[in-house]
Image 1 (cartoon, rainbow, N blue to C red):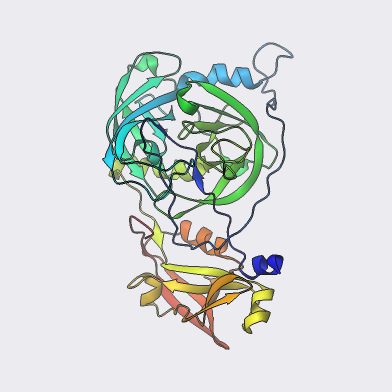
Image 2 (tube, rainbow, N blue to C red):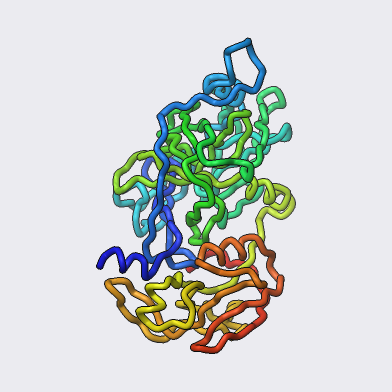
Length: 403
């Protein structure tokens, strides 16, 4: 019965925890429910040794290979140790590292990495969000430099800083191509877990195409899953491939109910970040498309249980008032029901295709919208009862929060 319940509402896996900033008093950022309301889900992790060697790139002494310590020596000076003074704020609903949060302020610490000779540093937005003073150390130097926020994108949990450091202190890291990764590829993480600066861990790419939620509740697509140890304070640091190139920004962890790493970490793909850097420099923010629905996956079991006209697609649960879907006339579920312990709203439209591309799950919808631009027209194929309809909607600008 439990297994059938899970099949009825199969949805995207959403990690629950940030692998983020360590805060002296508080300041760990809670993950809120996203614009896609997840109703459960599961994931599979590929087992791997704690320290996997990386491939030989041909440099260095013969036979030495480009192993973890060589990547560390090459890239370590480009990794930043970030300290951000966080103002007092309201207590969060929950602390992603287990302990209840209290009202107050503190110093958040996280990681980042240099991307150019101008002093730009990439990190996670949740490392510096709400900070009124940011200081950065580079490599193994004890010299502290002031930093300012150039731009942020809460929807992908990315922030771009400008560090006032001399040219000789800047060691930019090369950006790779996350789209070229394969499961099993070796990776190295360098960061500052629990304030322990320049800590290196290694592992493999455990899975690709994961989806996680940013702190503002929206979904981030194409996320890299790794078993390289990532802990509080690693947030914003680089995930590096065998060639010494950054292929992700370490961002979140799954702890299995505990307070530490269990071999499931998530990195924002560098291909996503690469496309945002120019926009962050120019405008200080990034625009994203918005559809304005929450939905549950349609499965053959759900279709049989409630007599749906199709066995694949997404069943619209809610529609954001005055959002793009609402303005196009897409209808949400009207009747709440419990099926084998799983809650679902019935009677809404079932979306089966977007611009002619088949929709099998909410992951497909998220990927489509994340790859689109505000203002684009989208042709939506849907079922309303037994009738198939086609409606055209115009994607909007994503709001600041999914709430």
